[in-house]
Image (cartoon, rainbow, N blue to C red; front, side, top):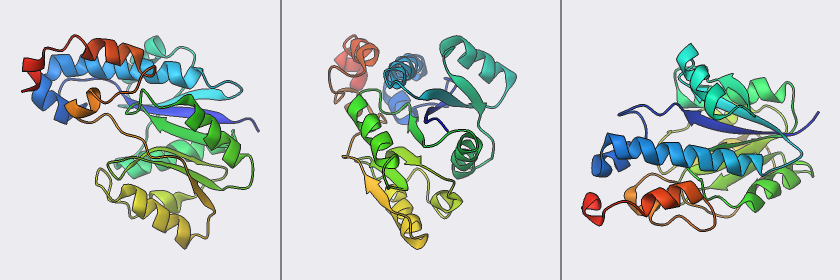
Length: 218
């Protein structure tokens, strides 16, 4: 089976994306930030060649699908299913691993992520590693990949906390899985994160950030 790179993303809606940034910049500017980060992430994904590109989207509605058909025409679209985030991640992997191998997942929170990190994840999985994790500075992870389905990696995880990566390591150890880690990287969750984006990554997002009035960040 061929490898697959999947981006997990939400349709940008007021009050539902980047709430910590929105508390500072407001909903309208935050929607712009999210859209730029999403487009930067999609371009990053497409720069990885030799893989199928997929996008796991929320909400799982016709409107949501229509939005991503427009912004991501080169991606195979998969609706996120399940109430909890862990269920949606697990479901995405289960559906893709039935047709592709290995599968690597990234979010839209790392638009400046080096493409070399993604390539390294596929290289590790195509060797003898069973799970690859890209830990984030905030205690979560920006990337996870695997060769076969391991639902335990998404169970008993306190999502959206600073222990997500550590608990994922614990689940992998419980299952006796060989896990390899990529370098630490940052997520895009706060206004400070906007100003920490690394060139030449995230060109659209960085260009938008350059137009933000410093007074908006006070």
